[in-house]
Length: 269
Image 1 (cartoon, rainbow, N blue to C red):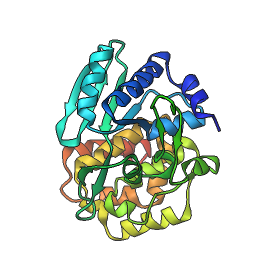
Image 2: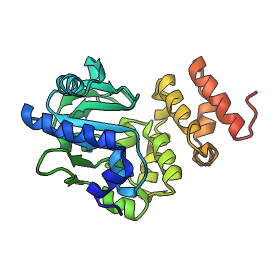
Image 3: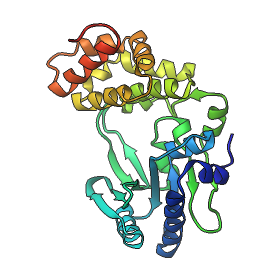
């Protein structure tokens, strides 16, 4: 597995590397912590090229994003409700910035209530261990890996593992993501995680999701290089049949489901 600092140099463009260094410097000046987190860390460790960079701050992410944009001559778009912002650079590179947060699910399949938290809180709210790692950007410790949940081990052993048994009850869309990452990375979903998926399905939690959330997950699967592999796995899990049986589908979901059925050779024309 790739060394983090070497991996950053190999997998991220020089421009992005410069953004990360400047972000760390600014965070120190503001008394914040700053990290890259999630999928970009997984990709760096695996030596995969990555263009989706997420920076998480222990401190107000929108305020941080505004100051960083000013230094780097980037445009910034903020999303106050979520405490997030997106920087767009002149070469159209984008970097997402978010305040480290914790999430509380008041009922199954509902969108969470979000409050500021630590970087560890932010990692614990993630979907799978391989996506629950962070790397410090701070001067003097740039490249320090935070891996409290065994993500590096699961990368080595090629496993998709949810962080806790309520993962798919809290957010059933993670079922789609588990299969998407399993097929994209050529990993395998571990038995305990498969059991947790089965429990969420048995509680009919897919039926609790808004159509647009399912449609988004299907669109992301269809954008994968080999979507048929992922869709066949979803079909084997009985999920495609469940979606076909959903009553009163909105057009946004109906359109995506028709595309899915065409890929699977099940009609949909």
